[in-house]
Length: 165
Image: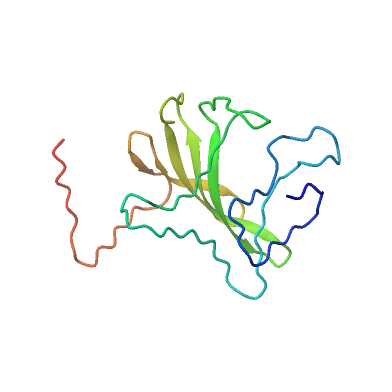
């Protein structure tokens, strides 16, 4: 276990199972150890893939990416609230002077959390100057297209609107 401060950490080869990068408490003193804002994975002149592999003969096992939020500045459980952004996945291009946002999928809480948290999923894209929400899936399952046309390209396969209620 290493407790030293570092501007960069390189983990190469070997088994890194159980490796924790970051901190479990927030440092309140400038320059103190334990401050961790971002985890960057960089590859020069190649593709980057983040893999999760599950080897199992049981169909119920899976690989998950778990984005979690608590409204507490230190490790612990403090309830999230309506309107809290819970997490997002962002894609970026490069303008030649830096990375710029292109599109985003974001989850926001809508209601009080109990055994599950009611939330919506927002699909946002950029027109080159700003983000705007193009589609939304509500906690009730309603899908709303906010901008643009709803284009259904079925190549002559037809569409079945046979809902019974």
